[in-house]
Amino acid sequence: MITFGRFSDSYKPKQKIEFWNTSEKLFLEKNYMESYEAFFNYLRDDESNNVSFKRDGSRIEFELLQGSKIVKGFIDGNKVEAEADIAEFEKMSVAFMRRLMEMNYSLYYTRFAMKDNRICIKFDSAVAAAPPRKLYYAWKELATRADKQDDLLIDDFAMLRTTGNTAIEVLPEAEREIKYNFFKSWLDNTMKRIEGLNEDAFSGGISYLLLNTAYKIDYLIAPEGTLMNELEKMSWEYFAKDNKPYVEKNRKMKEALMKISAIPKEQVIEDLYRVKSTFGIANPAPHQAVVDLFNNNLNNVKWYLDNNYIDIAVVIYEYLATYSLFSYGLPKPDAKLFHLLLNITNQDYFTALGAGEILFDSASGKFSEQLIKSKIDAIITEGKELYPELKYNTDNLKFDTMTNFLRSFIVEMQPLNYNS
Image (tube, rainbow, N blue to C red; front, side, top):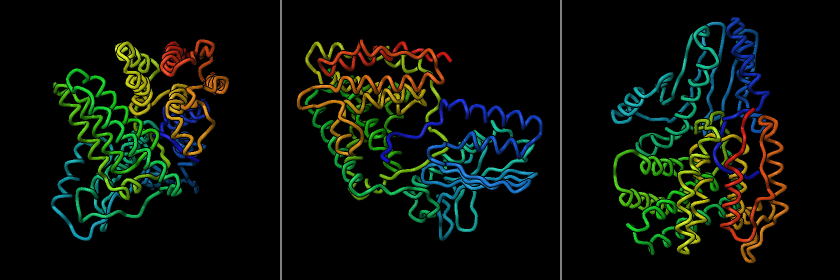
């Protein structure tokens, strides 16, 4: 199965919320083992089977998957312990030991440690001091740091190597080849497009082009490892509140994407694999965050349309989807609607992957109107289980041009009612 984007544990279904409530209630009653069983059932994603645990009397052994890492641990009558391997070394180095010590100061619940010839990250606590809420944030810190730091440390320190304690699924060669070709094509096309734009007069348009390319790669190609880290770093630097002019920020983004584009093919393909995760990276965000993003950006479309920069207007609409999917843990209907939008604007990519039906024919400019409407209706119907007031009027969609379709699609998303 082809997957897109990053795992999100935001806005879990009702059954999972019930497991959470049960876990907290049982913990307060000091039924610790039963509380933890309910907690593991809350964490487990039923589609990916990312969590496994086995109870034997007053002891539970468990494993959590997070990206390429496996978190292993146990709970007994007295304590909770969890750890994940990060890297191996043959001899000590002051350089990486100093890095680990510095990173420990940024951790709230966990710590980096060395065990035999391995670097790992650990958490331990007395059972009575480890309620579900604390465990959630502690294990999220442990799992997400382990998944990120293995690549960063191994890249920075030549004496470190991978532990082999990984949980990845290698993609079929054909899928990797398609993803790499589109990865290169999107980067090359963006660089060519901004070369023809004045960097002062079009600083806003250039920002949209560069950011959308990075976020589109992140969601549609879904790289892991070093490539994912480079895309994150580029985004953080652009949005840093450092008072640098946007022209300068654009130059840095362009340099970052050119650096990514220059990565040898074999290294890019190494970062293309599938993973299972237990914790989402992006924090949960309400639909209002999406509405605010629309309000802050939609007015910018008009100038590009009026001055016949149709391609940049389309990029701005795409950016609303790619930025949201990159930055927010979205309610499921929002995430699925944005995915549908990107399917339509990147139909050639989805067709090459053999993912889903044809929603848009770029040669004729024709949309599959009824199919698009039925997919939206299915998203809304499914969403009503949690949000009974959810409504999306597909009769208001315009199918005469791509920009009119995107505008009408976004306009109908704005008033979605997420009251439960």
